[in-house]
Each structure stands twice: as C-alpha cells, then as structure tokens.
Image (cartoon, rainbow, N blue to C red; front, top):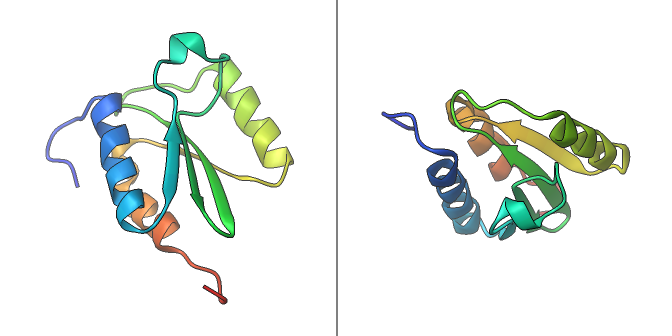
Length: 102
C-alpha cells in the first residue's frame, strides 16, 4: 500500500479513510496528551462490530500502558488490533469482514 514509511498520523488517516469507505464510523483521539495513557488510537464501529486499534509507525513500539489497555479491552470481549503500515493486507481483510447476517 505504502511506497514510503508514513508517519503514524498519515497511517491513521489512511486507515480511517479506508474504514469510512467501508461504512465504519470512527473515533480517534485528537491529542493523546489529554487522554488516559494507553488508550487505543482508533475505535471503529460498524454493527455488530466494535474495533479498538492501536496504530504504530513502521518502527513504532507498543508501550506497557497500551499493552495493558488492549489486554483489558480484549478481556471484555472486544476486538482489538495493533497495526503497523506493513500490515495493510491484514487491515483490508479485517475491515472487509462481515458476519453471515451482514
């Protein structure tokens, strides 16, 4: 997808744009300095799904607080993902998924 290493902001923009084209409603943290540590960058909603996604630049690392939050969200039965730009094929697969009733 990317012929260059996008910043996390550019990567997030591409994921949001793609998700919106597939009918997802999205929420993203505007400024993480004013949010609780570890909260995922992006939430995507398209019933019956709610996806909580941590996005990283190509060399970005997941912090301890982020790992802890993602584990808690997953323990609540929610779909959680951590994606890097090189995961674009998986991103397409996950976002295009629909259940048998959809």
